[in-house]
Image 1: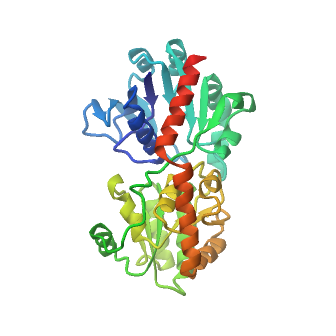
Image 2: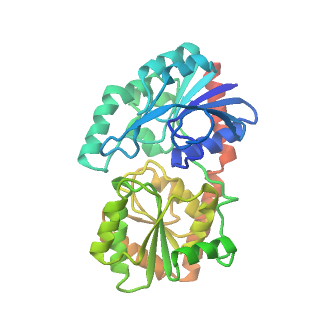
Image 3: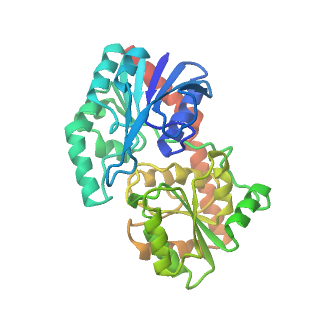
Length: 383
């Protein structure tokens, strides 16, 4: 089977969607011809054409435009619409419906079958401007693209129900994201890599980990405010990993709250080092106001780190009963839940984290997920 995959970013860029594409297609590339069409962003300095884990990667010369309220810039890729003709395939897989034209979709449909994955559901709960713009876009263009697809996959049941028009749900399937639970596992805090992280950031107290792009929808400000209250009772450090346009604002808010010595902005980390950061932490928090699905939650569960997360989008489908939930934007509830985990006895804590790891191993194995995509692609090509 020849598969052509479209996404504006790809490895070594390590966002959630990019992780899914890498993990699924590094497996399918062992049995099929896989080409990923992407921009040069995230791979600057790399050849315009190279190979990653058996995947043929084409990086197009690109320009970007920042759209206020959008979590990522809009990428203009030179010659993108011609790629469906240049790379003729059995199935074409688009992974970001916001970035591509209907002209590309028309060319795809002339050459083969068209699959689309909903990684980012219809915006809801971010802010009035973003939610409204997302709704307008979806009716003008997004739904046209989804409706044209021969196959629709969604990373959560929530994403499917909120984003796919009812008339297209008959050819829609939920395929959850996965996690490499052999890499993300419980490790000794005495290991050199973990000790180095603890020493580098001064994590000599109770450590809360938060990861994600520094944008408003990730809700970092609510966690910072909750930590300010926790510091009245406990010696706590908050390590925030990731970068983004809100960093300067968040750093100023830390100074205003007097917590700049206890909130650490760690920036981006290498994908290979991520498992060690989870193990350097005592608990993980995801305070998002919008989250179609969360690979970070799965990574924390696999690493046997207790999770406190907002009850939004697809998060309850990932976490199940293996963590604690709070309402989005509710810093009081976030404070209480974090304090509850901090004071948990070892038996209760152990039961929570073992349940999380068992769920990950049972439902979020990348090999099974890649096999599911393969089956759906075969069925789509056949009919």
